Image (cartoon, rainbow, N blue to C red):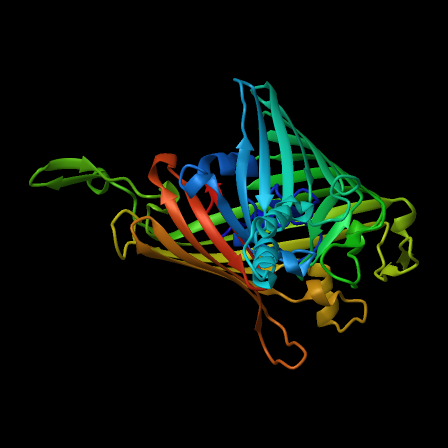
Length: 469
């Protein structure tokens, strides 16, 4: 079924969204905004681990991606590769390199076309363009396993397209993960941290520190999450000249708690049998498992989740109506209440045909999930209150369609429909969509290589995803 945990995860600062804007391959979602598309959630595998695996299937280990740069002449197309990957039994280090070829190709082409004769000095001048620092970006990460349940991750990257390539613009992240019985504890600190809002805009927060404890999914369906978060410095628009920064990213300290109850019920389900796994032919019997163990049983099911959040803000940003950046430019006009509480919920229907084990026509799946991000905003809208948050007051319908193309190759569309009118449009309309093509890997039981593209963000990348669909 569609991922219902997005409902509770979206209330906190530690939910990762796939993004080629950073060499880590992810950005954080802005808490308190409408739930993101399932296809937008970042892989559970680190980007360094993904490239280490993907390099085996790509020429020279080079993996392409698409993301609009800050300098248009660099082009959206980029190439990434894992340059170093030393490791021991409990430690590893990875070095990622990225190269944007468009500017280099254009410069060399111009150099050669403007030359009267192709002599040695012409080729020497053309070769100097390879030294342009804006073409290259690098990222370094290392992870140390302190115990079977505790690990420390540190990463940093330098963006070549920024003028401060060798000076100021350095991304640094420290991540500590501790697993307790039925709980996860994480400490995440970044200088700066990159967030993406529901409109596809990126915001850079100078300092972001989060300490979270969350319960693992249980058979009872009850789950809870506690967290303390600190923002320092005013958020800066990463890919836009103007815009209003989300209030959740403004300076301050926030203590937040959330709980949820999740339940699912099968309408019908065809269980996997030994006859499905063992195929008998004239030449003998052979083993034929599903390409993905999570897609091996045809079924129809309904599921739902309800929950609530409460938050307390401390600091100057908790009471201000309008904050200003260092340039005296208003960054937000949204009120942020020192104390707040709200409820959320989602309801989902899933239908799957096929067992995803044959070469053709063995998988068609549809997930329809109705999301309500804020019950208070929805109620205010019903009673026509002027204080209702327009973004959160409207229900959204997430539709996921998956169709087997051939063998392990699946085409998927994730779409989000806003059940509200828009300026110039009446009735529901598409708010976001992501197209993807995946290749499932039987040896990983539920792993796949995914190539996705977002028309809204004009971004695309290739990822390795495990136990996700």
